[in-house]
Amino acid sequence: MADQCLFDFLHMEIVSHVYKEQQSNKEQVDSKDGALCISVLESLGFRVGQGLIERMTRDSPSFKDELDIMKFICKDFWTKVFRRQVDNLRTNHQGTYVLQDNKFSLLTPLSSGKQYLDQAPKYLAFSCGVVRGALCNLGLESVVTAEVSIMPSCKFQVVIQKLS
Amino acid sequence: MSRQSNRTTDSKKMNSELFTLTYGALVTQLCKDYENDEEVNKQLDKMGYNIGVRLIEDFLARSNIGRCQDFRETADVIAKNAFKTYLGVTPSVTNWSPAGDEFSLILENNPLVDFVELPDNHNTLVYSNLLCGVLRGALEMVQMAVDVKFVQDTLRGDNVTEIRMKFIKRIEENLPAGDE
Image (cartoon, rainbow over all chains, first blue to last red):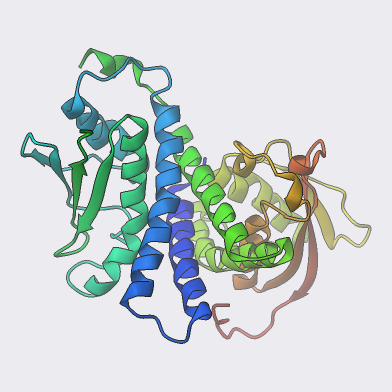
């Protein structure tokens, strides 16, 4: 089966393509272009997340509540996509969740420590999109952001958007 | 928690879906970024090349395979080991040229196109062209220059997917080649 490192390499190529493409359109890349690249990567991930969750939950009964969905994301979904379970899930019970992964699979090949910390957001945008896409198809509109203070550990913050 | 029991999606299968879907998203993005299919094909090949030059290391470390004696052995290793390890399929090796420098890999099913249908306006798109780049890049790292191209594709209505590989020359110098 598609071995994991094939996906890792593909992901790296995608990131580098998106940035190169942006660069070639302009002389200089400023912070606005950076944000654009992040959003392109995020939307790629979103589509992938949607597809994955549809296939994973095809034969399963519906979820009990929001927390139940989040637990599923942390366990089953994370294992399938990122090869391990989330290490820690915290919530304020008002729609904000923090998922901590101490050895995030897409950061481990990159660095261990603070070196290249400024490059980390590029390599997390896709994953944020995947999570948001998955949640979206389970009926939860959300905003997903990632935060790294020391690699390869990573915190994903999920804020569920309540439908008013 | 009663639900847990009936979620036994095969994790390997899932990984391949992740790859397939991600690849699909990439091709879609490239089609947006470039105006014509030729450009997309070229870009896919280039990205594949970059993957190939790295993947070969992983492959050699994992498979414990030594130097191939001839091109026929190389063909077998590619089909039976490389494709099996990374894509979970074993293509058949056929249509050897009389000189023994050219052969075809026939894929009964191509995991990259699992969920794919090509729209009418992309009839010159070689969807799986990444594979050509991967093979070219990987073989270049073991001093073999090859020409790789798709000659049949199930996406275009052929019965099988056929990748044609042609041996060009041995690369003599051992200088590391730069990224493309």
